[in-house]
Image 1 (cartoon, helix red, strand yellow):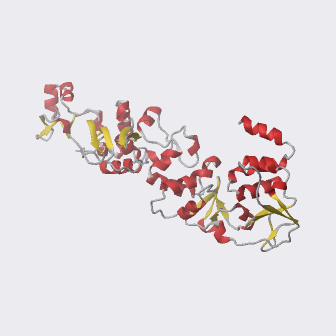
Image 2: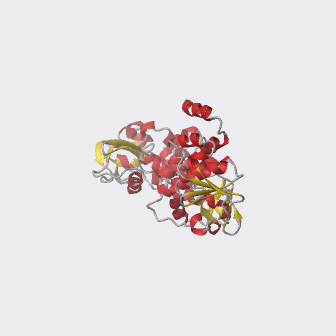
Image 3: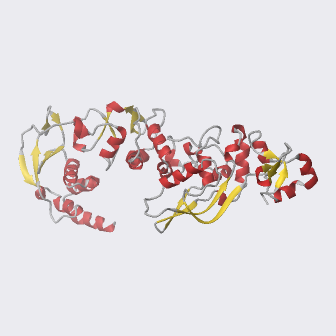
Amino acid sequence: MADLALPDSDGEWTPAGELALPGSQLASVLEPDALALVDPEFVAEVGARNLVAVGVLDGFAVLRTEGEEELGEAEHDLDDENRWYDAVFDRLPQSPTPPMLSGLIAVRDLDLVRPDGWPAALQLLADLPAEVFAEAIVSVNGEQIAVPSYTRWWLSTHPVLDGRRPDRLRHPDAAALVGLFEAADVGPETLRVLGCLTTVKDVLADPGTAIETLYRLGEPERTVRADLLSDLYPRLATALADIDVTPPERVRVRPELTVDRGDAAVLDAPYLIPLLRRSTVPAPGSAAAVADLLDIPLASELVTAAVTSTVGSISDWAAVPGAPTAARRLGLASLPGRIAWHQPLLVTGDQGVSWWPEDDLDHVQADAGPAALGRALAWRHGRWSLRAALAEAFALPNDEILLSAEDGAG
């Protein structure tokens, strides 16, 4: 019935599905002449309810398709449809067979809304069924993957909130993103239809938003939660690995501190900290990738040094008090290797350090304590995350049974 030709206000005959009802809420939010209006005299003669029943629009039209279709192959005359397909493909794994979209539900004519009509338009959209905004399902390699619906994607990537894109705003409940993104100042019904950021996963899913986040991290006026900053650069490096990104001029080194890129480095060897004259960007486990993303050097590229102090004595790691517990925590029967004791431990430039690895020998300052021993051993065995646990083993050498019981309780 939407193809039924009806008289419009210009005296032409137009399909019902391409006509808006005069005086309707939809007509009030659209650009002038975006859609033709039904002839007012014909509305009075036939009745608005009957016209809506045959397809004349008094609210946003919803397109629905049934069955599966190859993602990106069908055209439905939706604004930015191909951009939505690209955004969906960005979220999918590689597949030898084409991804299949399980039906499409999408709101038409979003691009026809006037800039100042969006507050009312969002109210109209909020009245639509929840299924319009539910995630679309794409089948890939026998797996069903949920992706943003066309409608939520379109709304999130266009300036529908006072000239701002919802995907550059956070959901008010997204505490992890406080300081990095401003909260969307809208009610819960409007939030339901928008694609505001709720998690770090949302930030990383879209390359454009990920790049925006990279630059926001370098903006001095922002702050970032410490627990987020500790892994955000590595996750951005992974998300943007295949994208050519111009690095930001400033990078964040502390939750509240940014520095010029030329004053920063990525720490890839923690024993270099006393010798490094630059601020360090947090990049646990991903130093090389983050350095490449930000186009800044690794600490090991800036610092070259060697032990210059005299060795006081050398012993086996296995002879150090607490070694049995440390070995067990490393999954070893006993600790291999040797340790050189210094007082003080100096490297090139008479710089004092607490520990320093060298070939098959670990140098440690004699009075540096368990923390230095734990770090030296963790680095030697490539288990940096265990440094605190190993330091505890050396701090409590007489409590091997108790520490073993505590480890078993976990």
